Amino acid sequence: MPEVWIPPKLQQLTGGKQQVQVEGGNVRQVINSLERDYPGIKEYLVDDEQQDLVPGLAVIIDGETSLLGMLEKVQENSEVHFLPAIGGG
Image (cartoon, rainbow, N blue to C red):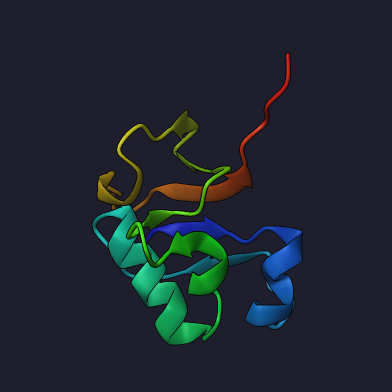
């Protein structure tokens, strides 16, 4: 199962766990599995109106920033990170 690294701000929803394993073949399925196992986490990750990741949130899969957002494929042994996008200039 993919391993999801939980941002510190959301670890209160996972009982303090920094990493969890959940089912999913793409980011949307991973988020839905997270919500099933840790109710309330989805609201921090998904903009319901847009049906996409909340603005300013990046998903990194196996060290690569996703360009497909919720549709990005996730492998059985993938590492998934949700990080605030870094801006500036």
